[in-house]
Length: 138
Ligand SMILES: [Zn+2]
Image 1 (cartoon, rainbow, N blue to C red):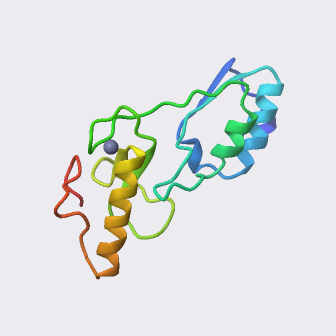
Image 2: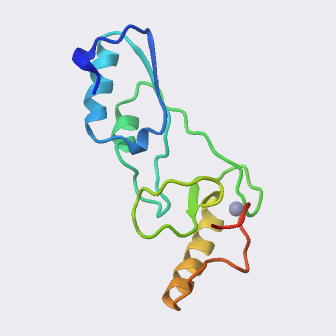
Image 3: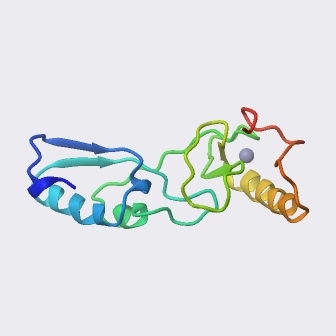
């Protein structure tokens, strides 16, 4: 934690804000109220489409909010609002890169999430063997 909120910088940048504990909201508020400029980058939704960590609370309190979108890995749409994850169990946080995660637009995310759950229900060990992600799953 930032000791006594004495940060010798005018600008503070936090990446992967979704991975922080809820206490980051109070730290951010205190830094901004103390005159610091602060930028937090992070995913607002997890791979299940659920709010991710403290990001919804940070977005709600932000003076300015910019929502960036990736290109869908499946149809090429420039409006990928979701993240698909290949494997890794049910935990919300699983460390991985392009071998495990792919940006997806909502229609592709819905279609592939349903297919993935159906594969799991049938006892599939590996997912999406007929629908290769941008890089092969681990
Ligand atoms: Zn798509």
